Image (cartoon, rainbow, N blue to C red):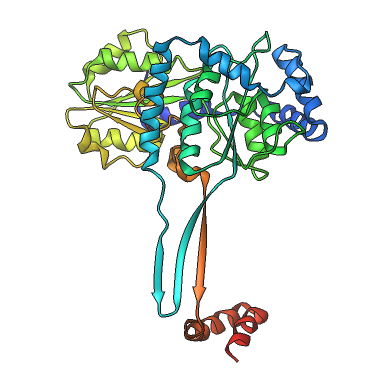
Length: 405
C-alpha cells in the first residue's frame, strides 16, 4: 500500500499511471487501413497473425447451430444465474428511457423532441485469459431497451476456432443471432467500415485492450463510440468506523482487473496504519474531514466510488464526479459489475468529470422538431430580421420574408 501525503501527489501518480501508449497508434492505423481496403481477407489474415487461428471468410460469422449448442451445454444453475442478472439489468433500463417533450411555446408555435433509436450497434466482448461474459448483457441490454433493432457481437475466437460458450449462451438468452469470431483492432475496423460479411454499424460499445481502445478512438466520427475506457479503478471513502477487512477485500477485487487501481481516502489514522501493514496494493490518502474526502474524490473522478461511512447518504450530495456510487458497507463494487442492474460500462481515467455511464440515451438520437403557422412566423420576423442583419445573412432573412409577403 502506497501512503500518499496529499491529493496533489496522488493526482501526479495517477496521471503517470493513466498515460496512454502512443506507440501503438501507427500500428492500429495500419490495421484499420488494411481492413477498410481488403475487408474479410484482412480479418482472416489478422486473426491468424494475432490469435493464431486459421479461419476462412465464411467462418467469420458464428452459426446459429453453434450458438444453440453452446446454450445446451450449460447446466441449469449457470443459466438461472444468467437469467437473474439479465432480468435485473433489463428491469433497470426498461424504466430508464427518456420521454419525448412537447412545448406549445406560443400561439401557432410548437416545439418538441423525438428520440430515435440507432439502427445497428456493435458490441465488442474481450475473450482473452478472462472472457468478460458479463459485458455481453451489460452492453447489449441498454441498446435493446432503447429500441435498437440490430445488435451484433464481435469477440475473438479460441485456438480451436470456437467462441466462448458462455458468451454465446448469454447472446442466445438475449436473442442475439449475429456474432462474429474476430477480435482486436481488426474487429473495430470491420464494425466501423463494414466488409462483405460484416455490415457496418452506427455505434461501437464495449471494453477492450489498448489496441481496441485506440482503434475506437481512430474510427470515432465514422461511427459513434461509448467512451475511451482505460484500466478499472475504485475510490473508497472510509470513516473511522469502516471495516478494514471489507476495504482490503474490495481493493483486492479491483486489482483482479488488468492494471486495476484501488484508492482509499480516509480520516482515520487506524485505517491508514492497518492498510500500511497489509500487503494489499493501491494508494491511501489521509484527510482531516469527510468533506475533504469528497473533494479529493471529485478531483479523481473515479469509475467506481464506495462510501463506507455511518451515514453514506449524507455524503452523496457532495459527490459530483463518479461513474457509479456504492453506498454503505454492504454494497461492494462487485454487485454493480455483475447483478445489481445499472451497466458496469463506466467512464474511467478521470473522464467521469464529463462522461456518463452507459445508458439507453447512448443509443438514441435526440431530434428537434419545429412547427410554425403564419401568425407565429410573423410575430418572430422582426427579431430574426435584426439578428440576420448583424451576421450579414441576407438570404436567411429573405427566406422568411418571402413567406410573409
